[in-house]
Length: 203
Image 1 (tube, rainbow, N blue to C red):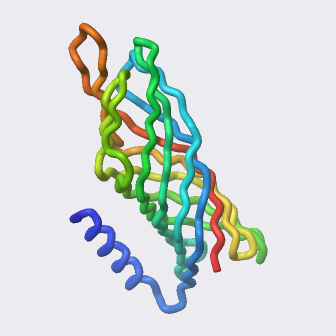
Image 2: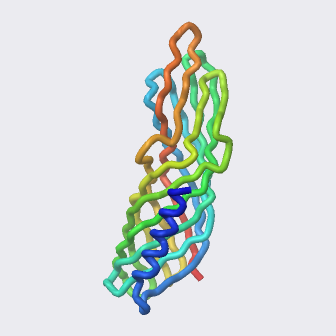
Image 3: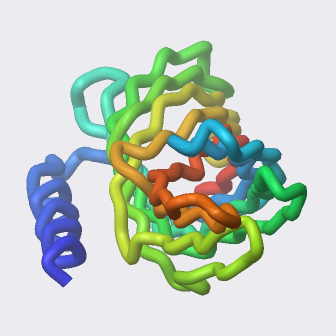
């Protein structure tokens, strides 16, 4: 709850700091997650799967040439597969609400297009199954966590936006307690990072 209040205060502070001449646009954003799973466990092999994200977004620019912000509230799904030393496999699916807040800098290419670069924090809140029990191990998702984005994009005709970015955890997304017969159980930190390809339309 404290994190949600912090985000709300941040939004309010950003909006009150925007000059009256700033341009604010609302839209819809969606895209593809190419999950990159990382684990502390060396004896575990990982394979990655595609997921998706979708939700409302808005952006605003301020009278400093090319500088602006954007924020979204996205339903986000990521998948991965873990293979244990016993040959068993289990699939991990994360469902969350992600709130990215990025600072962006654009370079105009004329009235029809511009290139922009962006970076910023992202706040995630788990809304799916928190515990996954399998023969490989027991995976537990964190209820909330913080990640970060770094990327670039293309803005077309002031409405259509295409972007590519890497989203990486600033802490663990969850942890895996391995099930290895005859061995002491170990708990390993894990992350579900992702390359993201997004498309947004601003009204």
